[in-house]
Image 1 (cartoon, rainbow, N blue to C red):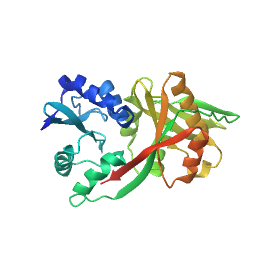
Image 2 (image 1 turned 30 degrees about the vertical axis):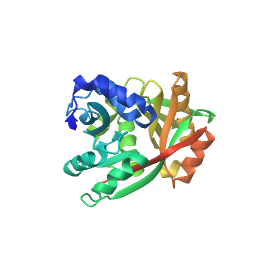
Image 3 (image 1 turned 135 degrees about the vertical axis):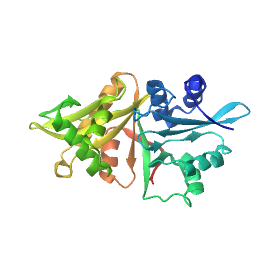
Image 4 (image 1 turned 180 degrees about the horizontal axis):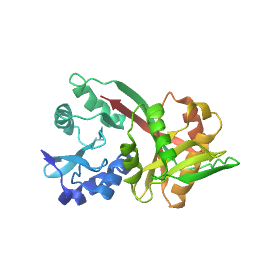
Length: 271
């Protein structure tokens, strides 16, 4: 049975998600911060569908207003039901652990055209090895600073192939949980790198939006800003996690030197 979930289901949804905590960190963070009822003005709100077997929740299928779908299920019987909804709905990204996403994609790929298929790795850092650079500083994101907004838009376009308007950039930096830090690295009065905490739970903080412009790479900026984010996460008694494209060898190497280790395969499919 498939049901549209509402705020009344929050307790049973979180109970299910907590059983699969590391695989559902983004969902846990969003449900705790923004709830289950959809507010179209909020990018990280959305429509949540639940799959039930004998009255027990066995899967969650969320469609967020920012265009992503990050499903999870612990019963393979959910796959055809979720696939049917995926075919009907309009969204841009389907992402999650490969073992969850691949079976769903096999059932929808004849109906939806994928323009990008990214094979990633999900990394967890339980043995942090800090990295520091001399003569650099870190600043927080500030939606009133046009230089920061411009850098964010540059990162979206050059780093993630997504064109962002000024309004979308401001909303992305504004509507986040209190401890979802967004940090920029400054060298010689110039922004040269960024990283943020994408989502936060009681156990994990997922790092994302890591970007250094092409002309500033190979200077250790990426490693330094991610190290700073890790330091903050660990100071809150939580574990840093992140995703990285498998063929991005430079980033993979940098993350491994910080103590990150492979947890599972991850897929990001863009339609």
